[in-house]
Image 1 (tube, helix red, strand yellow):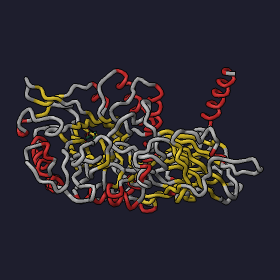
Image 2 (cartoon, helix red, strand yellow):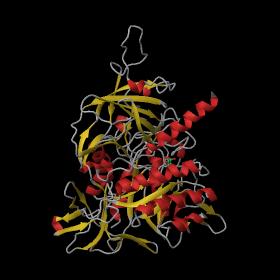
Image 3 (tube, helix red, strand yellow):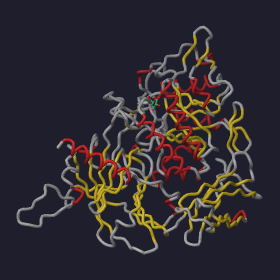
Image 4 (tube, protein in one colour):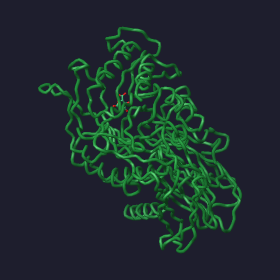
Length: 593
Ligand code: GCB
């Protein structure tokens, strides 16, 4: 009997993995979509009984003796997109399974295909359509899709999603991380309608070094040879029709005249159209050159200093995840006001509204996957997951010229397995895109008392284009020397960014300007003054990114009066008020031309 169960289990896994989510369509926001956002029915499944009871069948009693101990109707209702934690007090701390369900109709056309697209589901999920399991996904911050052409009916489809946000050692992030573990269908859900052969993917960007050469690759959904694909940028008077090769792909480079390159000061975008006889897709794309030479980062042939800031994908006033265009505008406007030209999207790929709006508003972006301390680098399955996750991120955002850095890790300890793991992630990025800069953040800079300098030995830095250092001088580390004498000798020969520094301060709290535990804006201001002084002694410093724009919610923060579950390192409070240090950072950024 046991053996039989095992055989069933193996069969189930095999069948199921065939149904795993497929590569997503590039630029879903430019396609013909039907939104499935809105109110969904929900069942909280604390003990994970739903799957066993096949609640995704949503059965109703028929015979006199039938009964079911569940019903999606007349129960809880949850908004999609949104995390569940901010929607009901009962779910504030919830980690476990919630079932979401809704019904929908579609217009079926014989020459059209339909894909179910999720912007993100946190953290893992299984999808059931009309009682059948059709797909699954792991990873809370990247999109996935499942083709449903042959599974949908015209009327009354029943879609159920089993969402689980339990932390596990093999997950990414793993067991503990300094932000809220929001669960739910946190981003848009669409039904994407395409022709039978459609434009699945394209990658159109400026050559890494040349200011007048646009490289383009377009891939159709099928390996259809000799199909015409037209690439058009009307404003540049570019229109070319090419024939697909046996992979259903076209590859070409175009020399363009009078191209105005994108930059934070002038975020010019061009309307780019890709079409075939049956399909067309259009979006705004910017063009720019970014590279590293010696210790400098060049944007459009000129060295640039990154005036950066980080934020989580969170609206503090709502105590929930950011998910809309309005949310993106709120977060980015505050960064603009601070005088930033760069955003570090901490610590995971954030939603496409943020990424697209950042490009429109003129920010360089650093995007990373949540390889955040505590990752099980020995675990091959975790490595595979990370590889898939980073590929999903790069695939989604490769046409955004704002995207400058692919981040492979935050605060990792050197080890052989870590090196293999991170190298694998770099390979994954480069297998899609060789033009962006590869970055990782380290926190192991230490003070060498003999040489009186800050140093770091991590052999991995040779694999990276830009080295990022998180260093909380004056907060987690007392000053070993006065800030005006704190010289750095770290990653010489490469550009270095101080990617995190800061202190906690409760908005409005005054206190001793030299006492860390005053939790005051005054101490936070002292710390900023000291760090800005130290930055003058980092010869290869090419950017700074204070931690962080807004106070954010975190289960790491227990202090009952000063924190109450909030990390208070924000330059802006949870209610949107600017702290003293905000003005200091603003002055610093405005002084750098
Ligand atoms: C760090 C982490 C960041 C934390 C921050 C802190 O080094 O990278 O995620 O939130 O420190 O406030 O401790």
